Each structure stands twice: as structure tokens, then as C-alpha cells.
Image (cartoon, rainbow, N blue to C red; front, top):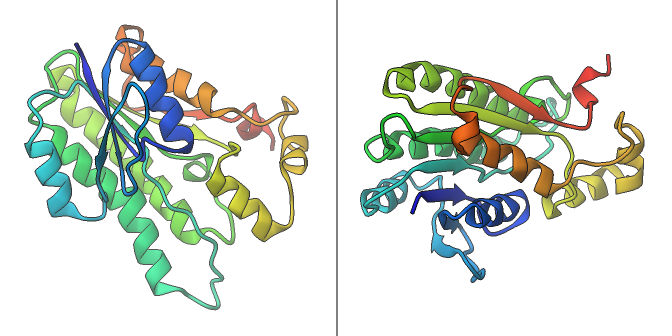
Length: 231
């Protein structure tokens, strides 16, 4: 049985990914800072900003076929009022945590069949004025994806990034509250007229993690209902 590890795998997009991979017949390890019992998943505690803990967890695995780096943290900040702690936390969670998990997984991923999927964001492909740390981190995740894809190509291991736009998760709803908007307002700005669902993001991840995705590596795929097409 193939084994997948999904960081941030017990809530939101991560939970949808974990369930989708489990439905494909994988044994899924859902790693989270606040592990929760979810039927059909192995739930473990992991803070991806704790690099020794990352290395201990991966060091204890006997097998790993698919790594999905989904753990994330967002937060707005004003350029005129820098928040050093928030900047550090966002970079540590989204970028350094992704790097640490990728590095720790290298000895485990099988030649010719290993898969890494990094969850970036459409803000890794464009900018937003009040999200400097998140944009920097997610742009970094895409750069890391491209670099690692080239490094692992001789081993037949693929590395890709998936870039969702707004998805109705708790993190998104918190942001909407800060902006005094709601899901309907956000959906009105999407060409397809609705938000992308967590399950749709999970479907793309599952494709990249499966045999059909074997010819794709080093790419950043938007899952955004057409939002990146809008000038």
C-alpha cells in the first residue's frame, strides 16, 4: 500500500486532500499541530516550524510515497507598521516548513514513483499589497518546487505546486471578516461565478500524486475558477 503524508492534514484543504488520497487506497498520515481523530486516517502531531520534530517524524517512517506540504499560515500586515513576529511565523510555516519536510522525505521517496505536491497559492503567482509575508512565502514555495523538481528529475520523482485561490475554509473566513466581505462577494469576482471547493483542490493533488501525473514536474497549477486569466 502506498503511503502519503499530508501536513495540515486534518482541517480545511488538507483534510480534503487526506480523504481523497485515502479514497485512492493510500495509507494517509495526517500531520497537524492539533491532531484530530479522523476515520480512515492516521493522525499525528507535527509543527512544521519545529525542524528537529520534522526530522524525527520522517526519521521514524519506514515508507513514504507521497508528500503533500499543505500546512500554512496567512496574515495581513501594513508596510508602515511591520510585524516582525508575524513575518517570521508566516515564512517559517509556509516556506521553511515546506523545505524541511521535502528535505526529510528525500531518503524515503521511491525512485521512479515518488511524488511531492506543495500547496502554494495564487498569491504565489501575483502580489497583494497587504500580504507581503504570505506572497513572499508562497512565491518561495513555487521557486523551491522548481528547484527540487530539477534536482529529483534524475530519480524519477515529481515535484509540483498547486495554487488555489479563495476556498471557503476557516482561514479564508477569518480573512473575509477582516475585509468585511463574505463568500458571495468573493465569488462574484471569479469568472466561473463561484468559489473553488476544497475537494476540487484535492482532486488536482490526487492527479499529480497518481500514475497519470508522472509526466508533470516543476509546475505551479492554479486552481482558481479562471481568476488568474482576469487582467
